[in-house]
Length: 166
View 1 (cartoon, rainbow, N blue to C red):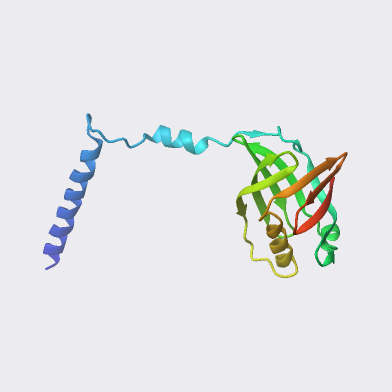
View 2 (view 1 turned 90 degrees about the vertical axis):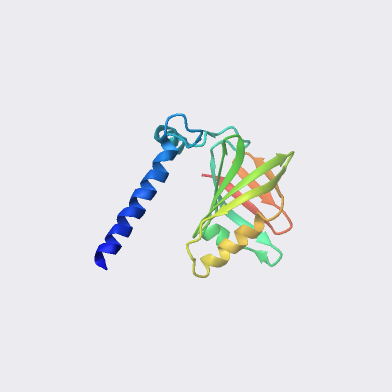
């Protein structure tokens, strides 16, 4: 009985080896990439550029308001906003008191229209969890922006935030 299992295992191993080795024969029409091609692609990093209206400056929130009034945590637990172009796409990086958002934006005059949004998820406890949700809601709709000296203002129906260059 044990000998039959061993024979079966050997037969299956041989069959798999024959089938798989046929894929790598010279003249094969397989389009599998080479190891060097895979390594080369894995090492390519997105091309980063500071050619955005905000440059590569960092801004920290100093105050803000929404429909409920002043949002005091924006001054005590500031959002930090930077921007860059990655492979030609303007991306805002927003650090909240607990997580990070990366928001791809398109720009038309003074309006940032959010595209793809990536968010880390550390499982924040309140109150920082609610700060995260509040910030995500800000980027669910277009945001009017204005840069006046070292002050960046972001505004939409959800909120208005003033950030200072840091």
